[in-house]
Image (cartoon, rainbow, N blue to C red; front, top):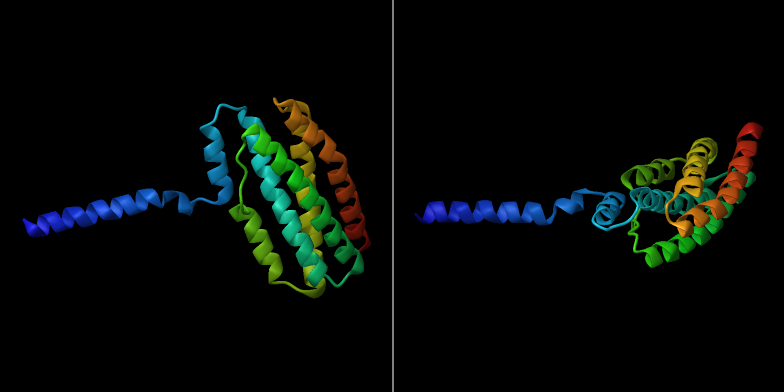
Length: 183
């Protein structure tokens, strides 16, 4: 009887541990999306906010990395602009989402963290090339995301934030595309 009781206690303990820690296997963006799903709000708006927040954090991290690792002065300068502009936008988004009770990630999504990890392993001209390529691709996606939210967001403040941020993203895309074309 003691063996059966001990086994059941061990099995119950293992199940409880796994159930309590199931969210630890999810990245911060997934956790934010799940928290928003439980709230009564437009799903598209909260999904936009989660993607924008994680992407913005990645832009800041990669911008700082570019300031340190890039060899091309234009890439270093672009990195500084990314860190500054996206830090400002991230603060605006954080204020907005707090007022709207939208949960945003506290850390980068797994995909965004992978970009940071991959680029942090590179240096010199190889870093410049990969960073520039990522920034071109990422800003294309960002422009599409923000354009969609600026037209289709249900909340007028979310819509206004997306519309207000869009010209800055376009400026970033134009700048990084010019750097890429000159390389």
